[in-house]
Each structure stands twice: as C-alpha cells, then as structure tokens.
Image (cartoon, rainbow, N blue to C red; front, side, top):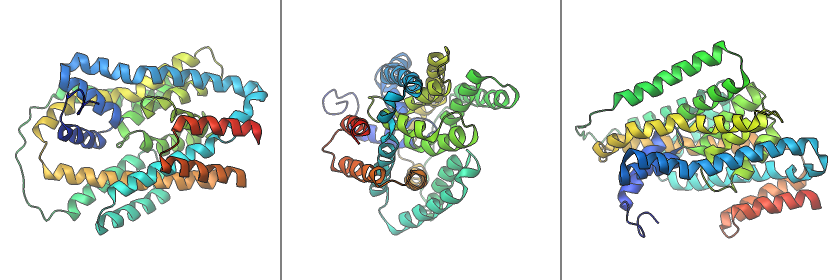
Length: 357
C-alpha cells in the first residue's frame, strides 16, 4: 500500500526502516509506521500516524481486559477461555517457525541460534534483563563472526541528544519510583515503561519478559488469563504491544480504575520506543549503508527467533495435560501455517469449542 500504491516510500527504504527499528528498543512495527509518518510529513504527522495506528487497539484491549473481570464473576462465560491459552501458544509457535525460516541461512546462523536458545532456557527466569542482554549479545557475536569484512564508513550525523537524554532520565526516574513507592497505578506505569525500553524486536519478544515479571514475579495476572488475552490480541487490528492495555486493565480486577490503568499501561509501553523514533530517524538517513549495523541486526534477529522458540517450549510445558488442549495447539498451528484461515476466525472457533466440548 505505502510503496506500490501510494508511493510514499521506496521498497528499499521501507526494508531498511524495518531492519533498523528491529534493532531499536521498543515496538518495531509501531516505530516503523511512525517513522514513515515522519518521513512523509515531519514530526506532527509522525505523532498522528502513531495515534491512528495504536489508539484503537489500546482502547479495545483495555475494554477486553475489563470484560475478563466480568467473566471471572459470571461462570457461564468461563468456557470461552478454556482453549484460548492453547491458541496463544500456537501463535507463538507460528511466530517462531516463520521467523526462524527467515533468519537461518548459513551454518553460523544455526550455531548462534542453538546457543542463544540454550542460554535463554537456562537463564531467562533469573531476571527481566536477560532477554535484552541476550539480544545484544547475539548481535555482538554476529559482528565478531563476520568481522572478515574490514570496510568502515564514516558516519555523518548530528545526534538529537536531548531526546535520548529524556528517554534515559525517564528510565532512571522510572527505576527509582519502582523501588521506592508502592502504588498500583504507578506500578503499571513503571513496569510497562521498562518493557518499552528493554525489549528489542517488537511484540513477540516482550512475551517472555512479561511472563517472567508479571506472572511469575509480581503475580498480578494468572498465566491462563495472560495467554487468553494474548490470543485475543492476535485477532485485534493494530500493534501487539496493545496487549499491555489488556494486562493493565485485567490486573485491577473490577476496580473503577481499570480503564485508566489500561490506558496508562498501553501508552507507557509505547512511550520510550516512540520517543526513540525521533532520535533514530535522522540516524537512519546517515547510516543506511553501514555494514556493521546490518551484521548486528542479523545477530539480533537470530537471537529473537531463538527466544520465541524458548517461549513456546516453556509455555507448552505449563499447559494442562489434556489431549484436547494439545490437539487445539496442533490444529491452530497448522491453520496458521496454511495461511488460509484468518487469525480472528481461529480465535472465534476456539471460543465456540469451549462451549461445545
């Protein structure tokens, strides 16, 4: 639509933007779309582009989070949720398969992929910082592996340091607040702002981070509700990071502040990544041909694929031992891989199955 029909941007420029924002902390698809708005019409259009893209999904996922509270107190609706966790895992498996097929091209890719998968399985549960550290380690490792190309290029770029300083200061204040104040709304903001600047690779990568922190450490939402909401989010148009709104609203469990919490959680997770667009966009223009950046990005992509596989394995092991649930995982994955059945239809069928079976 943007390249061929509207001709807002060339295919090469779009591909480079996608690659660059996969490297930058934050929601890569939302950052790319915001950057296209910046490219076409400047900063104001960039902000409006982001709002058109993200705001509807944030509102819808907030309302769905509130609806889950209604379900929890009305048992007749509970069958709707039975198979949604299984479908959610099928989306994760599908993401792992498709991304792995794209990034694994030569032997060294497979070696890095396996090593990062093992490290992820062993260490991810130790800290929420393990995921971003592994992504950076994977990128640096690939640069070392491919160091045979000695070419260097001079970067002519005048950084907009004020934007980066704001992002860093907000992160520091965020960490101080999370350690010193005990407030539920504030905790939503600090948690999701942290995810926004500590995740490289977009929505799929934030899933293991959120499970480790929100489900295992903070226990503000159950794993079943988390996975059910994640499955529904796949059927909602818009960015996957809008899932933060669902988790935030659901964590308040019927409180009058649920809607406010959902909106705060939604915008908090986007905030650092969108701010970084205004720092990175001029950098993109100045560094389009730098080979080191392309290698680093390749390593990050390979590591991201391995971490999604790790998430799929971990969540499969946590499923209830039931052949019907396993069957839903298998069938949903096959339907996704066939690309003949839209995701919303798969979600609706799983909901109906809960009532029928």
